[in-house]
Length: 541
Image (cartoon, rainbow, N blue to C red; front, side, top):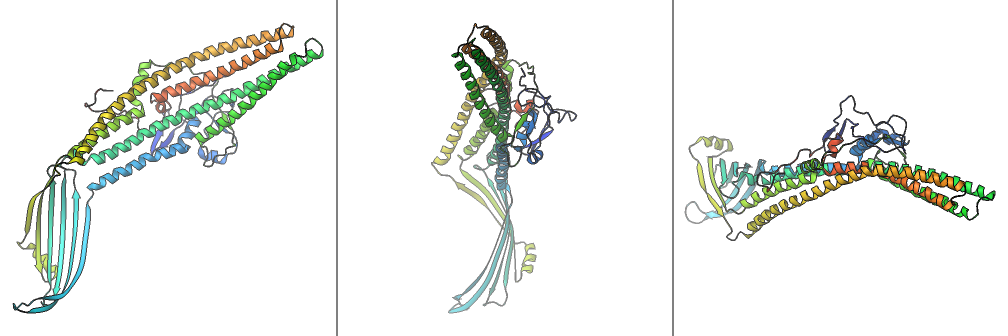
């Protein structure tokens, strides 16, 4: 009996995920080569070909794919993956937003003013009327540095024209102000914490993307084999229906010639009806599996939901020797995206502790301001006056501290507790990963052994049906017993194909649970590097 097969040789050269080129591990000479065709359900005798999205959009013929082409289509076209690809891009915008706090800030202001009123006479008694027109303007360029230093360059000018004086008056000033945080805001790590947290958030989104891609890849391969299994079941049920109809015809013939009682016909007819019922269900299952596979592959922008799929796969089971389970566990503890995500969350929590600890300090800033001024009747003359010996300088300290400081204390306590919670969550996740990988390893072993067991059962059921049929023909058996033997044979055939599909799916599940599925398929994606914590963590993993 033909058997389903999984092949691990990548058959594509490059796919882009989240802006990263996914390169195959095969050589350029072998890139594009597919699997050898099989003879099982849905198999095609032609050489397998990779169907690209542009070809799929133009073609209305059945979609012919092997397992590699299915992976390629899903990695390129799956809508859910397209949504996930955008998360790292969105995360990078938050990085730029947080970095903007260190961008220079340019400010400017200009304001004209007219004052009409009276003032004390210059003679010392009485009042005199006056009209004063003035224009003031200023421009400043400031920048905040991660050291807690703020530097501001300032320039200002004022122009005054009074009706009491014949000359106008202009004052220009250029100055620089430096402010340095001495307590709160002085720690570079605290000042960069939000920026580094945004970078970690982007990195976390890349590991999340990797985890999603592995889940998608597992789903695609599983649906590939589910669809192949559904096609094989139709083949089995079709053959069993033909066998049941043949048995019913033989029963009718023997009743007609009087060598068999008419009561034997009912069992044969019931078996034919049951086989038709099974075939109807199998065809319905195949149609639903086809829809699921089409959605995952998304071979064209607007999916033709009535399009048929023809699978191409080898007819022999791959010979795969698993490593020791401890080796798979070690790989999982390094490569599982959710574990690396948890470790990055701890790093982010460390930054939150640094940031909130800095908030416990009082704010005390030192500042110094130095300026040069020029005075004249015109703007240009006032600028020339900046060369004079006149200047202004000021320095001082600013202090601010709420005595209770409850908000800052609460934020810091929450950060410390959350960091401890993240460590506990990591320890719990490590245990879950241990269970996942070990359970998947057991399932692969069981599924492999089940293939041999179900093949033996099917051989015995074939022999049982042959013997029961011979006994029926010589009058030593009944139609009911023959029908039961046929039913048992069909069940054993279904179980054998199911065992092969389960084994292939169990392998994929094991590789996904240990975090190596993308690498084993020759796909490079973000999040391939294991994340290590610093020496403050309880244990090294």
